[in-house]
Each structure stands twice: as C-alpha cells, then as structure tokens.
Image 1: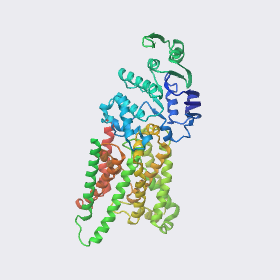
Image 2: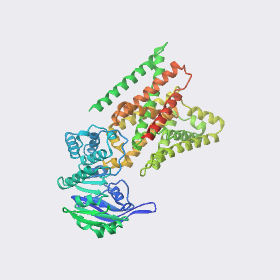
Image 3: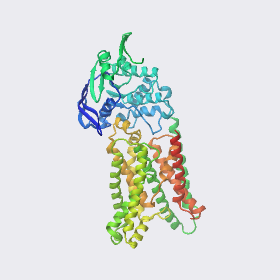
Length: 252
Length: 319
C-alpha cells in the first residue's frame, strides 16, 4: 500500500498540494483525474521522489521513501513522467534493458532478457526493437518508455498521462494493458488521466483532485456522475450509460 | 547487435590511428641521441595524452550529468576557476612563500581548492531541480567571465615582480608542459579513470536524465556530486598542465559520438579519449613539422573547435 500523510508542497508562493492524505491500496487500476493545476503531476512526482515535500510523509509498503535507499524502491515502484527527453542514443531494446537496472545493476542475465522480451511483446514493440528511439514517432517512443517501466517489474506502476501522443487504437491498447497488468500480474497501477471516459471504463477506483486537495475518491460509478463532475470541473457534464459503460458527454 | 559491432570497430580504428600517430610523433625526423629524443618526446607525449584524456573524460561526464551535448566544462568557463584559485593562493602566500613550496605541493593545493570551489558552484547550479539548458549556458558563460575578471583584478593588485612570477606559472602551453607535474598529474588522472571503470553502466543510467535515473534507483544528488568531483579533478589537472582549452572537449566528444554512433559509456569514454589524443598529438606534429612552430596548437584546436560549436548550435536549433 502507498500511504500519503499530510503532504504539502509549494512552488514559491503557489501552494500546489495542501495537506493531502490518501491511501492507495494494493492491486487494481487507480485513475487520478482533475482539472489542470490540481496537483496531480506534483503528487506523482512526490511519490516518485523526484521532488521533496515541504511537509508530510509517503510510505510504500511501510517504507518511508525519504529514508529508503533508491535502489530498494526502484524494485518496488516505477514511475513514468509525461515528457521524456533522451539525449542518449539508444535502441528500444536497450531502453527496455535499462528497466532491468535495479535488478541486474547493468549486467543483463537470461532472466533479464526474458523480462525485456515480455515487456516488448506486451507493448507490441518487437518489430521496432532494434530501432533507435530518436527514429520513432511520439506514440512509439511513449510505448518504448512504458516498456522500460514494465520491464522494471515493480509492484507499483505510476504513469503520468500515458495516453499523451497516443492515437485511439494505442490509447485503448495502453489502458487495456494497464488493466491486464493490474488484474493478471497483480500490479498496482496509478495513472493520471485527462480523458475521464478512459478513467471511467478502465479503472477500479478514481481519485479526483482539485486545488491541491483530494476532492473525491471512489468507484467509477460514484465519481463519473453529473454532480461530482460538475463540482470538479466547473461545467455541466451529462453522463450516459452505454453498453454497460458510463460515458461522460462534454464534447458538444 | 550490428550497432555494437560498429562501435567496437570504431574503437579499434581510433586506437590504431592514435597508436600510429604516437609512433610517428616519437620517431619522425629524429636525429642524434635516441635516449635523449625518446625521453624528451616521451615527456611531451605523456603531457599531451594526459590532457587529451582528462579533457575528453571530463566533457563526457559533464554532458552525461547535465543531459546535453553542447555544454562542456571548458565552455562553462570552469577552468577560469583554476586561474582564480591559483591567483588567490599566490596572493595569499606571496612569491617568496610560493618559491619555497614544492611545485607538486603547490599543484595539489591548487587542485584541492579548486575541487572545493567547483563543488560549491556545481551544487548551486545542478544540485536542485532541473534548469533550462539555455539558462545554464548563460550562467556558465557569465560566471566564467566573472571568475576570469576577478582573477585579473587580483593580479593587478600584486607587486609587478610577483605578477611576473605568477604569470610565468600560469602561462602554460602545449609545447611547454611543466615536466615536474607529469607524475602527480598521471597519478590523479589514473585514479579518476580507475574509479570510473566500475561505474560505466551507472553512468549510462545517469545519462538518461534525472527523472528516469531516479526511477531506476540512482541516488541522484550523491552520485552526481561524486561525478562532478571527478570532473573537477580532471579539469584542474588539464588546466594546470596547459591552461585554458575552450573547445577541445567539445570537438573530441562530438567526433567520438559520431564515430561510435551510440551512447554507452564503455564505448564513448574511450573513443572520446582516443579522438582527443589523435587531435592533440596529430595537431602538435602538424605544428612542429608543417608550420615549423610558426603557430600554436591551442590556436588550431580552438579554431576547429569553435567552428564545431557553432555547427552544433545551428544543427540543434534547426531540429
């Protein structure tokens, strides 16, 4: 379980997170939604120890992330941020290989190669395995990075807007993949999403944030409803049930 | 994998070329007593090789840590820090005090002060969260000028005679590498190189940038500071041997990347070092044999390097 206690973070005068307390239980897909500037990415970056909180504490399976060695955490928790600029010139397979670094410290074993292959298969990247990352399209690159964190084989998988740059087909494939990773492989997936319909159709749990606070959390049926969505996004959003899926209508 | 083979072939090619140049440097046009010629040229060669290796490695490490391909310690003006340290030490002890000092001790003191000062600088520049490359470049260039001017200011306060002694100590060139420093310089550079070898794969991870590296379990601050300390040692040693070289590192590393075609440190580091050796030893031969000492190696390196730097900036801008 990831436990977040009284977490606050400001950038200068702007307070981005205000006293956030949240438990993310093990297993399943949890989507983090909310308007721009709600603090979703900041929360993810704090869990990933990319930035330090002003106050508060985060524990992963009982280990305080501020005190646990980085290598130990890297075997339990993987995070992928929105933008990934690579200066290094690498192939897709080599990038996947870096996902094994927490386990192998750079010396890939047979088991590591098998894990890399599995991750590449999962993301349908075998055909591109020997291409350099800088020769790929934005969506392919995105998938290559997801393959890296998948090869890392951690219990927790945190993704910041993984659907960016992906077309509908790959967006759907990505969400199905995350769902499979959660339900077949027993991983706990926390994913920041902007499209609430993807969140509605693929998550077990939705956490909504607004103004640096947890606004609401619950099942998709509880959150994807006209009242909570109106208060969350400050706009009228109709919700229809189509083929058993709750779909929010906000395009018209 | 085909590109692994290409990198290995490139390394072998560079090693052969460097070896050939070294052989030519030692033997070409040699007349008279071989013992003297070999010892004399050997010292010169060792100096060039040390500088090439130190500058190339420090540049690779620096670019890995800052995740960019344009900034180098030279361009950021960090060797001006050496100038300032040496000047301040000299101003503090005076010519008489320094004359009594073993030059190696003086050198060690300089390097120690420089490591301390540059660590403070690095902590300030790179310790926190990410900054934009352009801002870093700007800060670096301005800071380099600031340090250099500060050093000149202190030099102006010195007694003219003392200033003469100091400028004699500070003015180093490729043709005139102080031989008494070669021992300690080899020791320091050798130690840093040995320290690097078991860390090559960690360097690859660090080169993926801060967020990815932290995700993969790198303790960013500690490890980056250790690498920057290594960079300080290399920069200080190179600066003490030959003075400021702005663009050598940039050229060596850019050509090395071109040659090996990928970014694994086990290929890039030796390749950069070999390219550096080829440039310096080959350039020195050019200066001695073709231009008959009519021009300085530093000048040629800076000329070629400056053009490469501009080409890189333009190419970057277009992408």
